[in-house]
Length: 396
Ligand code: LMR
Image: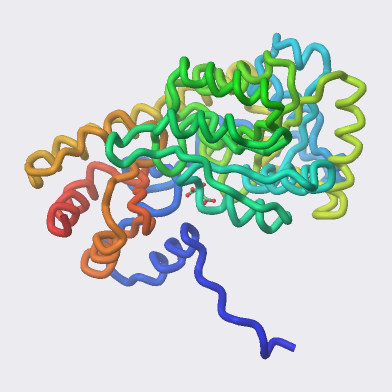
């Protein structure tokens, strides 16, 4: 039955990790996938996670099925984190939240839900966007289009282009927006630009789908969540996917959530009932461990403080690596201007390296990056940065 099965191309991001893992060079560096490594080049196991796990171990609870929408304490903690505990939509029970298998799982739940209830709508993602956005919405059955976003000339956002595209979209179009730390470019909108986007989205009756996988990696937890809150204030429907993969360094636990904001509590209850059907026919209900760890950490004041400090530490270290990268490249490749790297936000730098240059980094130096030139600054450290800079200078 498999005679007609073609070989699929490797995944543009996770496929890089596969190639990296197979590389025997002891000095190899993986700047591909969006994973935070500490200065020793290790994925950290956060103190807040260890402490939450210790508490959970002590309680030693049996592993029954969770509710279809996940752990209630987790869903509540997510809503408070994403929308703010005192936000009107939380108070009025207009938001429903379901635990999901990471940010990707949350996006897929949202996509499947939308395909049932807005089957004629088309999806719009930024040009460029996270590689999996297009594939994921297409696999849910949508036609996926791009709206202008990145301007290579300014290394910033082509805001006029973006706004005029939003103004032309048919009512009911689904617009995927990066709430903070745009992946892959690191170029975010300003507050004033968001004001314009929110106005157009709301006036034209578009459906905003905010993807927030990097909350806390831009300016801070609340600062990065601001866009979601501003959208929520419009009173319109919206979707928010969020992830704790990076912010809790819990990649393999697959802890994320989908929140859907409806226009009334009664509507929200109907939405949740349907979202539960999407989940039940997909994977039935989510796993316990990651959700419990995050719920415990977010709702225990001492642990919450530990988490916020650890997340701030990651954010600061990435910033230091950006500065180090720029100043070292100034020395090694003085004719090239990399100052823009400082302004980019989140884990990534859209470096401007071409596909050929990325290929040479891989083949000649065992340094792995995404073909688009996206590099994960969070994978740089004081030991590998000189080798990376030397290699970049050589391929430029
Ligand atoms: C990334 O963009 O590298 C991360 O979001 C990991 C992933 O799932 O692609």
